[in-house]
Image 1: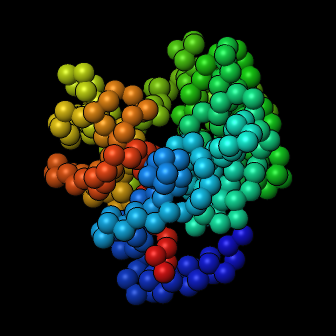
Image 2: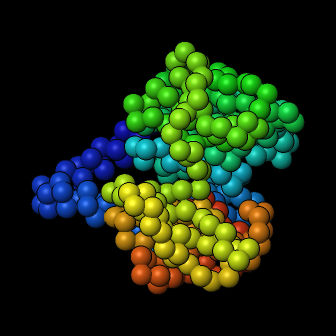
Image 3: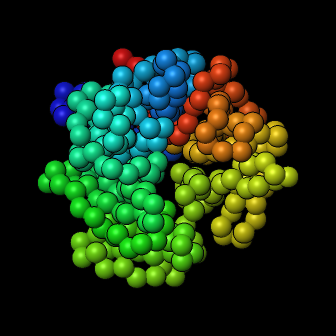
Length: 304
């Protein structure tokens, strides 16, 4: 879908690699200052936007009306989100290019709500998501290569997706009904308990994998906390009396994006912030709209 753009990007990347070397480019990220997010800033409807953190420039990615959840593919080429239609209110998944073009439906409309968490497989081929029915969460899998979808787990329990195995063979989820972690083989559909510590969906790993940033309740407020899994040490990063959600570590590891609200849930107004590892905070939005799901992005020619 992006032959011309990807070719241009590839040439730019090769040019950078030839000058500064692979290690330096990987270490600092190709462009760690672009945030994708959803917002109600366009006539009150949730749509997808991007912000250049260095200059404060906001650009609308797509006119598609969506739920406030979305996910960028690991290769940076595609976006998955939920389409909202005025006539047919049933939700359906759409995939679009990273620049908002060539949006295509990849599922039929569902009768039940689609969850806000979508997980791409490591090779950017499969997408896992849930539909939330009155008595259960159903895990679905979309295959972009074969243009097909199927139910992966329909047991009558409520579930939260938590991650993929590095080889893409196993999908992990937390069963909220049985309060247990499970892993399901995406080829065979076989399910077995996941004996490792519970994976949380509000945790973001640092680029080097040595630290985690998560949300912790402090005096009834949700504050950001950094954890070292190696020795279980932790330190509180924010203390601003707001409720923080959706932490996202920048590609070069020097700062963390998040949203903050005076309200306890993810339904009220929230603003975008970034904070460095010394606790210096910068508020990026100053209006009364809602901003959610910040995600860092790294393509070089996005602002061309």
